[in-house]
Image (cartoon, rainbow, N blue to C red):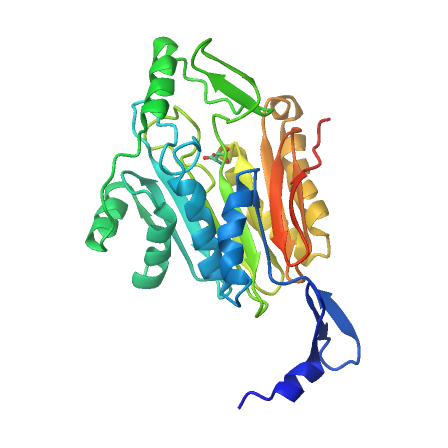
Length: 338
Ligand code: ASP
């Protein structure tokens, strides 16, 4: 039976977190929970939806799914879900994955016509013996489970694609600073939104469990069938409930090459702070090809089991959003190049 006195004897509630007794000792460690963090400025609205659940003792897994569904449904977000920029053939193809505190995970790749790929990824995790479903198989699975087929190419995204088609220059370059696409002068100018970006979200719930979710439409005007890091467990997202969790955004090919999010978690296992663990992963990419790295953006975001968090990226301009009992804030990540 739940013994409240015993429970309070081993954990003390602070105004914004918990002091947990270290087993076998009389010392207490501060744990910043619940807390949710996510990539980019648009993470703020996503965090708010996740926080609704976390602040009422909800599970981290439910929180990250609910959170990332916000940008997935936002037609003004051109890098995630509905309204995402299509591939070079005009198809909006979505990648997503989710992972819980027991290393259960699910993923969909190159999924079309479904507005919430994250929920399909969760069903793959919960209802199948598999981890990944791709393309038409993922779509059939979604439809068989009650998801509705929808057109995800909004008039605005279609217009941007048609502008791109005029030159059809196959150059899936990540814009390295916040730049806004202008249909008028057919160029990218400072100001966002970008031609890429992913929402990666990590949450620690009141019970002390971690989960993560990651969802994107990938690089704009990519080759049909191209899959980035975002739906690949270990690359775009990794959760180890003993240690921490990490997620990534930016040029997926570079993240896959170093199995980035897994690397960040392993760096934390070795004792690095979330920020330093992310920096070490960035260093791996930059030192592999310093010249190429000058034109690349990759950002990592990480959280430890105690609710501490941090980020690091290659180029200036990567931001992340934090929501906890004590803060609701957007931070600018430190970068390799200034
Ligand atoms: N990582 C995503 C991809 O490569 C894109 C991004 O986050 O910018 O598909």
